[in-house]
Amino acid sequence: QPRQMENPYKEPPKRCVLCGIDVDYKNVQLLSQFVSPHTGRIFGRHITGM
Image 1: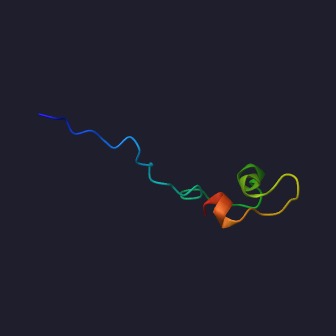
Image 2: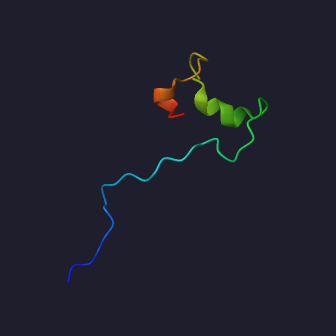
């Protein structure tokens, strides 16, 4: 009898990066993930996934 296995090609569910975190303007390390280091522009939704 064949065993049931999980699909190895199924992508894991995407989790929100900011869920459970208090966003504060003083938290530069967190906010720098969403800003381009070269231009200083905020990344769009298609890049950040937010």
